[in-house]
Length: 127
Image (cartoon, rainbow, N blue to C red):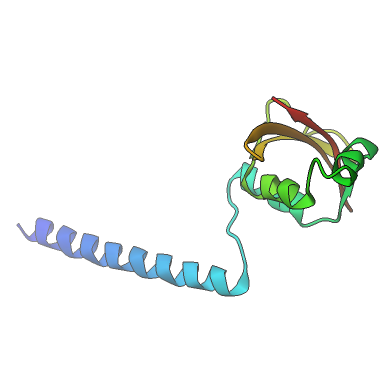
């Protein structure tokens, strides 16, 4: 019986600690704007967003013709899914990533070259 009592106290304390830690880290991340990226998808998208973004001529035409907005592109870079099976993550100096997302209720695939100093959006294909 003593073991079950100790286990109960441990689990109660552990759950209180997890709730406190979750609330503390959530408040801290909202104040500072930091993100906790541990998964490959999140780290890749954060790496692309942290660099200056440039666009290829094809993508620039879409933006100039107002068929596309850079805000929509950034939304895909925040909420998209990186297709690592299609991406070339071993190339040097720039890695190529294919990012699946939604722009204006249309499924799109962004082809992004992630270099050391900048990120280049090369293509936008619809599915």
